[in-house]
Image (cartoon, rainbow, N blue to C red; front, side, top):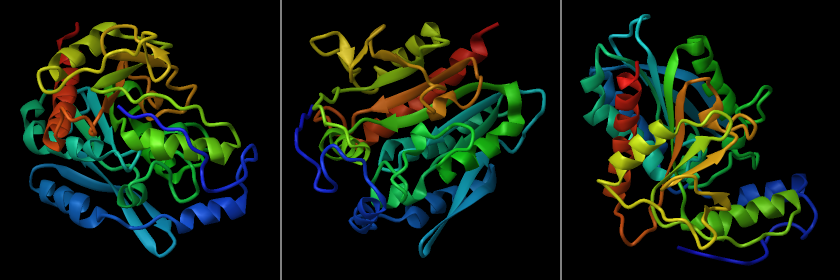
Length: 307
C-alpha cells in the first residue's frame, strides 16, 4: 500500500489547467510499450476462432489507433450478450491482458450459450504511455455520457448501443495501482485546481457495484471465485476502500451512470468494475490476469444460473 503527498509540477496550485498546462503535460508523455505488438497481434491471432471488428479509429498526432472488438462467431439473436471491457484506463495492464486471456482460454466454453462481446483495450494511446488520460487530459472512465468528451468512450458507446437491453452482464476490468496515488490523483487535483488529499491504496482485489441498482449476490459470487486466485482487499481503519464504505468483503459502490463510468454504460442487470492491485508483494502479473479471468467466468456463470 502506498501513500503520497506532493504538489504536482505542472500548473499553479488552486488554478485549473489551461491550454498551456495541458500542452506541457502532453510533452511529458512518452511511448513506453506497443499496442500493435502486445495487443493487436493477439487480437489478430484470435481471428481463427472469433469474429473481429474495428469499431473506431483514434487519430492522435502522428499516431493512429484502430479500436478492436472480438465477438462470438456463433452470434445468435436469441442469446444474451456478455460484455467485457478492458483498458478503459490504458495503464491498467491486467484489464487489457485479462480480457484477452479470457478470450483465449475460456470463451469457447460459452459457445452456444451466450454472445460474447469483448473490447480488450478501449484506450490504446494511454496503453502505450501507461497513463490514465487520453492526450487531451480527459479520463475516458468519467466520459461515458451523452456528448462524451472522450472519443474512446464515444466509440465504445456506439458499438454497444445497437444491443439495447440484450446485455445481461457487463464486466469492466481495471486495476488500482500505487501510481494512482503518486501520479494520477495528484495530476487530477492539479488539472482541476483543487488541493490534493493523500489517500491509501487498498492491497488486494475489490469490486465496484452500482449504488443505484446494487446486486450483492452477483458481486459476492465474483469475490468468491477471485479469492481462490488472489487476495481480497481489506477495508481501512474506517471500514472503507478509497473513501467508500465497504458494503461486503471486497465490495464498494459508486453511482456508475452519474459518474460516467464504463460499467454504467448499459442497463445490464449484472455489472461491476473489477479492481486488481498489481503492486502488491503478494500478487504476480500472472495472478492479476488470472484474477480478471476468474472474475469474468464467475460473472457469466452467475448470470446464466439466474431464472
